[in-house]
Image 1 (cartoon, rainbow, N blue to C red):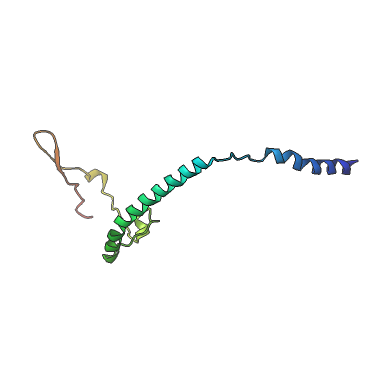
Image 2 (image 1 turned 60 degrees about the vertical axis):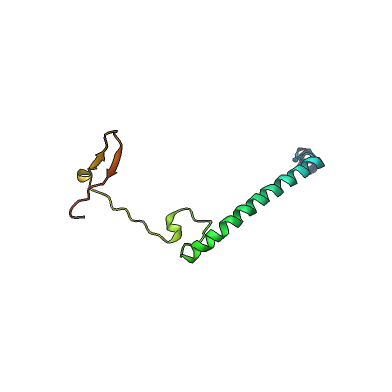
Length: 114
C-alpha cells in the first residue's frame, strides 16, 4: 500500500510541476526589431566614446599610469596612502577671512615633534 502511494506521488509530480513552469511571452517581431535598433545605437555610442578615450588611455599608460577598469581604491594601483593623525589638543585651524566672510586659506597646525 505504501509503495503504491509513493508511485502515485512520483507520477503526479511531473503533472503538477509542468503547468507551473515559467511561461514566457511571445515577443512580436516589431518589438524585436526596435530592440535591435536600440542596441545598435547603444553600441555605436559606446564605440565612439571608446575611440575618444583610447588615445588618452594610451598616453597615460606611457606616463606610467595604466588603465585598470577593475580598480576601485588607490591601493589597487599600488599606491599606499598613509594618514598621520594630528594630536587633537593642537589641531587648531588658523584661517584667513576676507571682508565678505569667505575663507581664503586654512592651514592645519602640526605638532612640533611630529
